[in-house]
Length: 287
Image 1 (cartoon, one colour):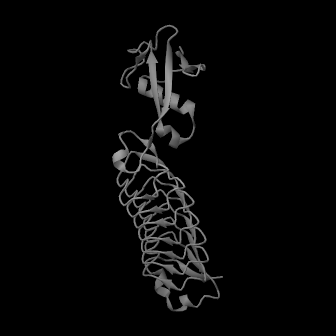
Image 2 (cartoon, one colour):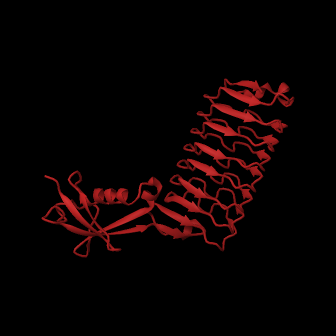
Image 3 (cartoon, one colour):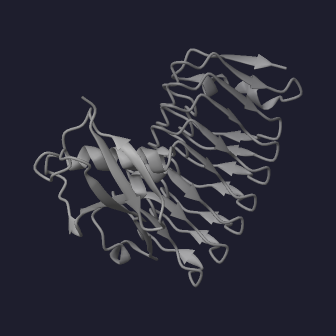
């Protein structure tokens, strides 16, 4: 026999929910969260409070214990986003997954500002910020989404290293250098947009980004550092522009899926740099 629960929201909306398939208040909250939004990132930030007769129900309670299987049960549901304004990790006073909005008064995200802040899921960086210093978000293993202001010109060494849940990122147009280890160990990173004004990709900048399948290097890049893309085991193709005149040791070492590195027919630099492919089985393809 189906069990239906009458749900009332604070804005006056109401609906009925079939709770036959669940047993606990925690499961009810998950169901309510999914009903409210279908964005998986937002679902992690969204918090749900369930009240019956003005009493807050606890996660561990069963529906039976809380009286939600009685005749014509009714609850009030309060949705709230776990969102905080913070310029550094000490300002994040919650142990739950959350979104951080950096204040408009901040002009730079300082060294280690949010390092190893594991409750961070989403970050918004305002237009006032022009620099993200080294290690700023390193080790934020829950971070999935970040919006970076177009006015940022500097992203420091290891700034996003080991952000293992980050799937995509757009680097602002005014950034000219991808610093050492900036995105190293971002194992979920599937795509990245490198702006046209970048002239150098430093040592290990994208090392061990094991989900990265392809990358386009802009025409202004002149330098690619040691191990820049080493360990990118899903990387299948790379196009290197003729502007590149300096390339480090083993930039594609351990890229086991790499089939070919495409370079310009007019480039003479690679005629004497067969070690570019050291550590992988790819071929140089002139086009």
